Image (cartoon, rainbow over all chains, first blue to last red; front, top):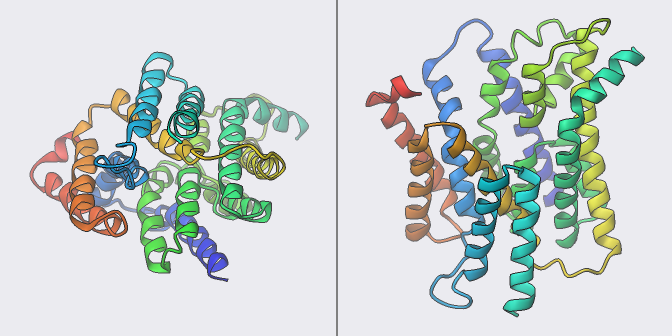
Length: 104
Length: 228
């Protein structure tokens, strides 16, 4: 039940963020909101990278070596090929190989 | 109508591959956490937001509180405000299709619709509608395939979670390469790392988001207006 409510909340609020501008910006615009809408994506995406890597422990275990190799692969592939899918699949495969084979 | 559908199908091809593959990654990951294809279907049909759905897997498995999930949803999806903003005029004549057009306005669909020019002999409303609709079909089909394939194969999926990390890293790299607004990326990294160190991995998200918004407003007030 908790899961169904959780999914519903996410669905309703996601729709809310999509429909809101059609109501509030119908006639006028608010510079601060436009500014935040413009720059928030940069900061939030960086935060999400940190969120994904939040459990990495640099001081023990594998010291985050697989994560570093994985992220490095994604960045390198993307700088060379600029192909989103290739970067994601390549980086994920390298990471999976690393955690499954090299460090068990 | 048939011609309109065909033209929309052609226009949506750039998104097809991406959505099917990324949808599959989402479906497989969700399945690997013990959620059946019904969940993949429901989430892709009703939430229909790529990055948010990946984060939603984490929220589900970590048993996040409703408040936490709500704040996370609002902030991750805040960028939708901008998309809506630039579609107000474009969706004016959509009539009864308008609610669906707004619901299905993902990053990728937005990028197709902004540049969409209705081919001759096609109805603009239906041309745009079918682009949006086909995009969601790819996403739903991808997540279903991923979920079902994931449940049939007994491959070792350890590390598959990294697809989400990779997705966000790619988005950040793209943002970095395609704009000069690096300050905002640095603010995002800086504040969330500081909050992670202070509050720990279970509790740093909300303080980070508050810190990020306050810093962005501070930059705005300090004269970042010019470079926004």
